[in-house]
Image 1: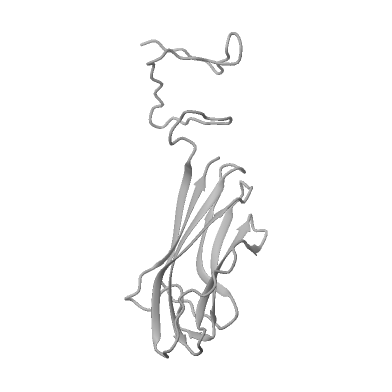
Image 2 (image 1 turned 90 degrees about the vertical axis):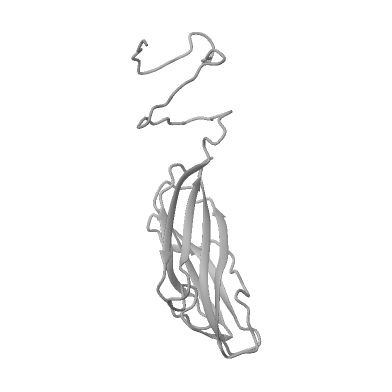
Length: 192
């Protein structure tokens, strides 16, 4: 096998470089293939750039009619300004009803490079809806999914906030006790 060492390949004429049909180009383990242009005809290339996950198992006590942090957050640093971020949240919760329209609400906020948090989602509204009892009600596995375009290559942090509406909230959204599951937030960078 022969080795050709070059720093740059250019077409002799025109703007295309072609390979013979049936040729195989191998990128060995440890090598990096960087696409700074448009990659066509590469199934699966240019899809998921990175995945990060955060979780919380401790309780977060909430007030009524006032959003507070759920202490469920995660940061990601996009590799390109054109990337989108898919946010997947699975949130545990528990409430004690005091009115006929008791519910727990969730919203998503974002901070880019320490510039401060802003709300990027609408409030979920009327989640964990439960009426007619004063018993503690464990609700869990609520999905909150969102797609975001931060247009940044700085560190981006996403966090969930929650509030109780017309109810007394007991350790909501993270877990009620040792028998409850964990809450998670998963961030996926979707490459353009």
